[in-house]
Length: 124
Image 1 (tube, helix red, strand yellow):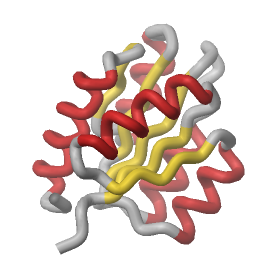
Image 2 (cartoon, one colour; image 1 turned 90 degrees about the vertical axis):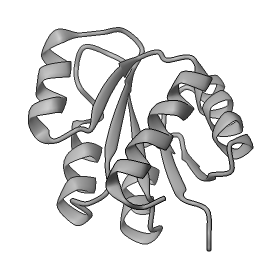
Image 3 (cartoon, helix red, strand yellow; image 1 turned 120 degrees about the horizontal axis):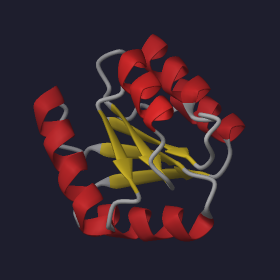
Image 4 (cartoon, one colour; image 1 turned 90 degrees about the horizontal axis):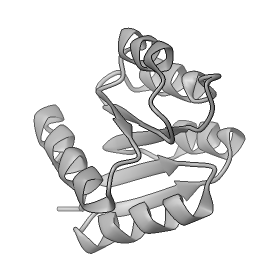
């Protein structure tokens, strides 16, 4: 049985590397993208068990990724990782169907949420 695959779409390389390393150490296959365009391509071509999108500014730039992922793969949970909590972005993400919205989680905490969401979705 193949390990679950997590697609990380984050524009900040240090966050991407930190989260990716922790998830790999937990046994997940990780696909990492640093731009929305790269993320859209991966959503369309690489099957994932869970998608993580970043929200770096008050303008919810992860919205397109969230919508696209849920439209193509409604069974795959999408987590939003925000650099700063913005209530409007939080409410928008949850209304659109995000599984969770986390403000700069510690890598170990993110791994726990990923494990929980993958277990709930039945993909793990």
